[in-house]
Amino acid sequence: MISNRLGTTLLILAVFTLGFVLGKIGNPLVKTSANAETKGRVFEIRTYTAEEGRLDALNARFRNHTTRLFKKHGITNIGYWTPEDAPLSKNTLIYILAHPSREAATKNWEEFRNDPDWKKVRDESEASGKIVSKIVSVFMDATDYSSLK
Image (tube, rainbow, N blue to C red; front, side, top):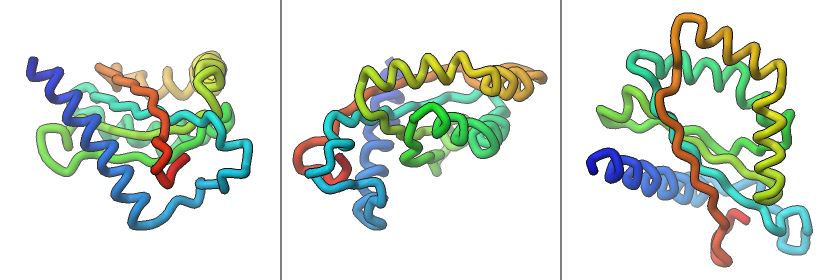
């Protein structure tokens, strides 16, 4: 029960944070509504729980490799966050991605998971042990009043 509440709290925190950040800095990814490329775009919020003591390794893997590989496979990096307060600050990474559509997301993830570069990075980064113990993924649609579409 605590785990479910924690997951819900993390989701709410991440969505709130995204709205706050984009409201403060604007969003360079927003295109005009006349642009067909934005039609059907979906967002994915992912929450990773790192194995004890492995958050630095997880962040290094994203910083040095994963974000570039996402881009290679048509996955748009929106933002990455770590909670400020313990205990989540010790083991949690929250990030948001965008895909042209839900179907594209499925294709993007399949290509990413089968990429030999990703497999090499994953294996090398886990040579001293597993990094991630849990992944939660939620797909979202921007509301009609959202500045992020």
